[in-house]
Length: 174
Image (cartoon, rainbow, N blue to C red; front, side, top):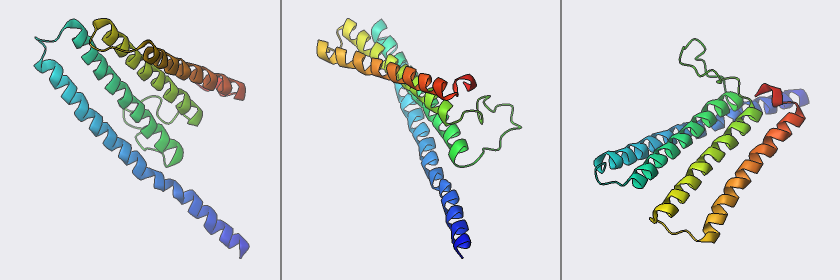
């Protein structure tokens, strides 16, 4: 009887991974939201092309890059998370299947995520510096220090994650 209950409990726990599937679908919805925001920003740039200064154009394009990087981050989380924690995505015969798909384990996903966060932070920091130099925004020295400090924290976190993976023996896989 105990073995029977153990088997049922283990099957229930194993099946509970499917509770993550709606969350990954929600992230797909987040991609749709990002696409709408991207379209709005692109339309704004295209509609005001003649009146935007060079710095305003650069800032607007950086916003598009920022949205794209967040979209890439979502794709990585959706694909890798679903494949690592729910089920394999059966697209092996598709020539469009990303090469990394199915090969990124949790450790690799963690490093890719922190790398994307560092890139997004760098874009935001660059936007802040461009705003500051153009005079369109006035950040205090303290605010700029916070932005740089947060960015450096992300960088240090990424380096520490990579170092811990190397120590744990995962470094050669990535």
